[in-house]
Length: 384
Ligand code: MG
Image (cartoon, rainbow, N blue to C red; front, top):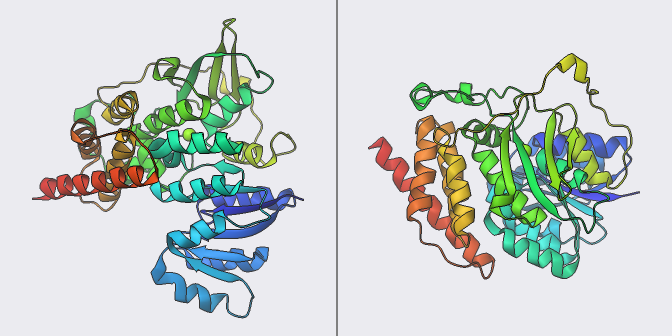
């Protein structure tokens, strides 16, 4: 029986992972959530975990109360996440928290020698060089959970020693594909949160609407698969059936397909290398009829261009761009800025943030902190 821990257990990926874990009789040793203390306590009691962490420190007393007498250890804050990431006897840690918060726990798990199923793309965007280097040094595997990266990982199976010529990274295009900047000026939060194909959390759904998500995934793919920026082609594929593909040197292109349901990549990451029944719909190509592929609009969706510029520059710049985006998305969801302001803020930070080589995690955290501060200043200026 496999033992796992889940950071982000009350989120979209976390709750689906728990269903996968239940179906396949995995033991869940620890769970962690941002602030949904009621659901976290329920999960902890139902699963009989050893420890539960509520990231929001204001909710710790409530967690203590809900779990009192259960014998479950309660934790909070970044220290709590790191304690879970360094638990012994865990075969795999699923990291599905949202944002930069996931960076330190990922590093902690890797340093502890615990394999990571990674759904937290910000970890690799901000600190990819460091994370991949430490994972390689310790021979700790990272299993991608992001559907595109799972597809690439799956396409690479049985190809050890064969060089990747190119990665075809597919994008749904989000709810605003084909729109002009003028049409996007007045977009509401509700419209941005209405994704055509995937059901996900608020941050990633907003990132999908701005195409920031694809920019983050571009960077994530470079780190996970050791390719350079020229080896990735982003292709808008509205049906979200081809989840990404790899072109090899013999011009063969191997893609992974399936219905757009995160349970497939979650289960593959948790059960790797085994494939067994998964509770999702089956793909019918004849029902879909046709698959389309188009080029993205880099001018309208400037977050995407900023991400590519940031990773081509390298060093701490991707961490800055990511931090600026997290601040800007938060402000958009709170109704403090407009939809297009997200891209403007990300672009400004990308063009003006100082950047240097990443030597350790402090460099990454500092770049993130400064970028958020710069973004907050830009947000205040918009509101002035
Ligand atoms: Mg994805």
